[in-house]
Image 1: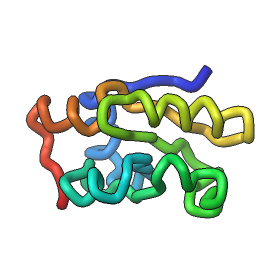
Image 2: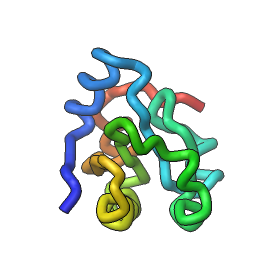
Image 3: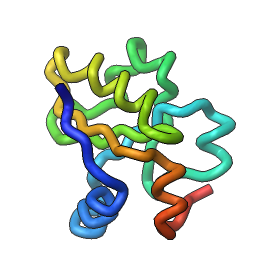
Length: 103
């Protein structure tokens, strides 16, 4: 079972290392409306054909709108050797907690 972090934990991780990989698995329109700063778009339905866009040598934080889709992607990637962490509450919790969105 992949690990989970809160948006506060993710914010602290990104503050310590802004190069930490964050992958947003939402749809392009959701991503364009606002995202965790630095997050790379890899929509959920494209993950199986875009594995080269997801680092395998570092912990990757997965985010969606509220945590459901990113949790599913994390559960799919982990058995394939990826070190993935689901961000609980997703972009919605990030925004509601007062963290900035990039657009």
